[in-house]
Image 1: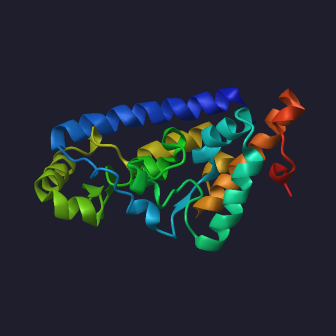
Image 2: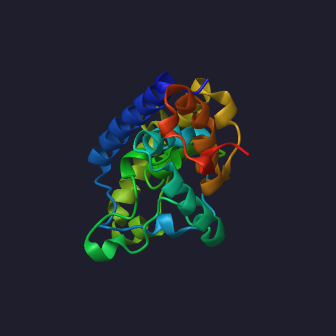
Length: 205
């Protein structure tokens, strides 16, 4: 079932993750460069639909689903995430249309860890951070080596979302398809609440 309770449960996971990442970055000193959006420029980002249920709810509540579906159609051609604003940096702004509602993959990349073949927590970060602040990245590696329990692991947070809604968590999709599926799943919830939330383009095919 897709409901307000589901949205709240996912956002609670994201809140815990933000706090966890903040704890880790305080120890390491790692931080993204100002207005950097290199990771958003990838055209092969994958995610699960559950990650974007809060975004879908926000779109319906602000009655901008139809407008956003046009962005999804464009992203199908470009390969970019539909939330990505390539030229925002020129105006001194971030590159995400709604940073607060970004997915799990966006939140963890650069600061999340995965378990390697030897059972060690390995930082998954970007070339920009490695080149701009190698000391901080090395500190992050050392923290993962010492204790995998203290760092934000991709698998841990993915499993938290899976426990909330297995159906929408199991499949990794191109990010624009994951977002479209989240919007379609939220359609019936908002259709039951108020027809004014609904745009024809958001109706499941």
